[in-house]
Image 1: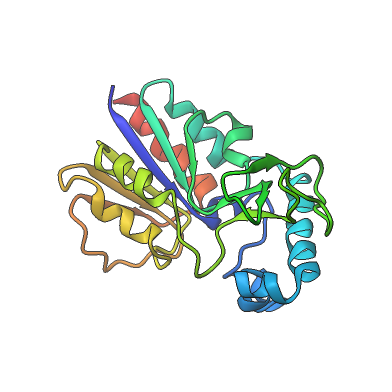
Image 2 (image 1 turned 90 degrees about the vertical axis):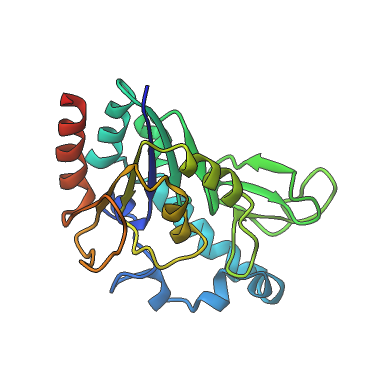
Amino acid sequence: MKTIVVLTGAGISAESGIRTFRDSDGLWEEHHVEDVATFEAWQRNQELVLEFYNQRRKQLYEVQPNAAHYALVELEKKFNVQIITQNVDDLHERAGSTNVLHLHGELKKVRSTVDENLIYELKGWELKKGDLCEKGSQLRPHIVWFGEAVPQIVPASRLAEKADIFMVIGTSMNVYPAAGLLSYAPSSCIKYLIDPNAKDNYYVRNLSIIKEKAGIGIPLLIEELLKD
C-alpha cells in the first residue's frame, strides 16, 4: 500500500469558516502576534491570551469539516494516509481521518505550565485563570507559540521521508519549520501543491500545482488518485 503524506495549513480550515491569521480579515488585525501568541504575552497578560484562545475554541465548536476534509478520508480506502497539519483545530479528526499529527498543538487541549507532559482534554470551550493542573500550576493552551520549539517536527520529517505521494494543501509554504518538510520527501515521489494563491516558481522535482481552493481541488485530485 502506497503512503500519501498530506501537509495542511490554514487554507483548508478557512473553507469551514475558521478565520486565518494571514487573510485580509484575519485575527492578526485585531491582535498583534506578540500580544496573544508568545510566551512573553502569557507572562504579561494571561487574561488576554486566555480570552483570545477561548474565542477561537468557541468558534471551533460552531463549524464543521468541509469537502476537502472528507475527501482526504476517502483516500484511506486505498492508501496509507498520514496527515501533518499546521492547524490547531480538530476538523480532520471529526471528518474521520485516522492518522493526524498536529505540528502546532491542539486547541481543544490544555497543558500544565510546569510540566509540558501533563496534557488534558478541555471540557467545553472556556479555559479560565485559576484552572490548575494536578501539580497546582495554571493551565495554558496546548499551542506552540511563536518562539517555542516544535516538538512534532522530527516525527513529521520521518513521515515525509516515507512518502510515495506528498500533498501540500492550503499553506503558503512560508512558515518554518513546517515549510521545510517538503524537502524531506524523496525526490522521486509525486508532489502536489493545492492552493489558489500558489506561485509558479517552486523549483521542486515532480511537483504539480493546482490553483484551486481545497474544497474544489482536493476532491478532483483524489478522484483521479482513486481511479489509478
